[in-house]
Image (cartoon, rainbow, N blue to C red; front, side, top):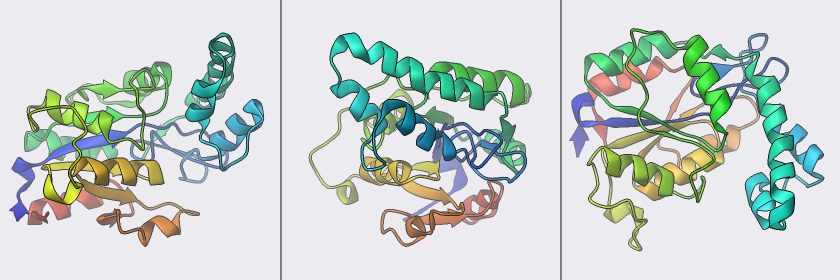
Length: 236
């Protein structure tokens, strides 16, 4: 069925951009000021700090460690995120899109695997005061993290879009929700798809495979590209 923009909700990932090779507040709000790309370089630095390969999920690795080692591991990746947050700049089209969402009373939230400080730093230093706040903001403290759909369903439940925050056993195709998940990673697309949401991929170099992934529903090159799509209505 077609959903108008007034019937939709939006969920935003929140990764953080730094200045060298990568980008954004989960691709959706932050970018590399020199190259306009997300901060994906951070993940290589994190894996190097933890001594793990690209095939191993960072948070899964940390939570698999003995309890007395987890705090030290968390501190290593938080130090990398903290350094990156000093170089945050907004993604092109962010403010225009946020103003559009506010005009049409479309809720917005953040769902991220990052810890609180970079989120707070971005919202406090780069988010215009006249734009309504993201709510709720789901960060690393929430478990299980993406790619689980649990965080998105938690948000949907807080907005009374779904009756329960529990991840159902039935197929996502049989429980669609009027919610957009906007992000740039495979975790974002999986989490959004499995929550029953419409997934929106913010394209970025090196992630072309996500454009062909069946869990990616819509693709945009910059955030305000989404405005025209919402104005026309979505087939979901």
